[in-house]
Image (tube, rainbow, N blue to C red; front, side, top):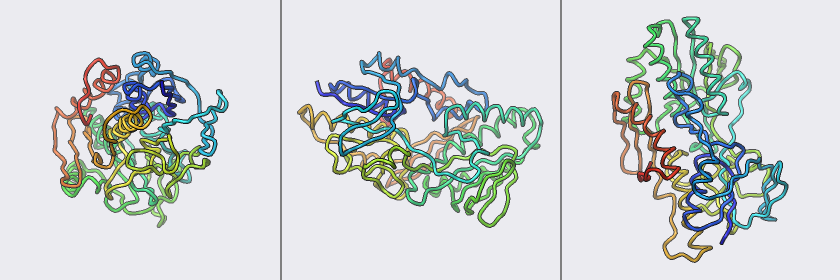
Length: 389
């Protein structure tokens, strides 16, 4: 049986491990953590809608269910010249067939230690919860949420979770009857954050900001973060008692220090079949890979899963001699998101032909909660997958 090594235990890596097994491969998944953190529903940890333990799911259980090997270790180096990876505890490992799904690092900003991110290390979601609790106990304050950009690869910008948590904090403060005591501002260096969702979505977002008395600070690059403020390139200041900031992504240190082919943002160059350029038997998927496609393209979990399934299918054709046509990821590029607001949601969809945002009061919130359960149950194979989800 053909062996494959998959590095990275996030959404992309887990999907790859499951589908490589389905295709008949012997699989080893190497992850830094023994659980998968379900980032799309982590937005509710800081507002106490959900507990941290409900946002993690045991990789041991998934591995046992699907019959792949799980190794908890850290990748320290990757060499395409020798077809090896170096592990912190496991030493050097030969990998003739490798899938890289180790995600991305973050663009650094001076003073970033004064911020917390809902898309950062999982424990930051708990720190955000505690900071919000402190502000609620105080009864007033200034809250600044935002995200950054990466001019070398705009697809690595992740603003959706920032907006979702922003709306959920507003909803919680409103339920407590103290919303009027808080100044809430959203900031971003681009002139129209969220523009990739399309003009209709952008217009509805503007109306929502006006109706809920949100402030916006757009179009100015971030100079630095201080403990109690954000300083912009023109030295203007946004005062803040709590700063939540999602930096844009770039290639991780281990990828930047490798001999892999990289784009200007240090993401791995691949072809449409997720094969790494010039390296036979090696694939890259999810946030680690450089996406090609329309200007509005974005790195999202469902695209990472498409890439994982395609890599498994294409590998089976190449290395197991299975019949069929190789699958490309570019035809599946779209933006798909249920943007939760605490008391409802907005369904966001965009592809080359359409761009829409459909308000879903009340039911949208429960749909997203249901998706969290769907993710866990479908990964265990207890319920069938729904295409596109």
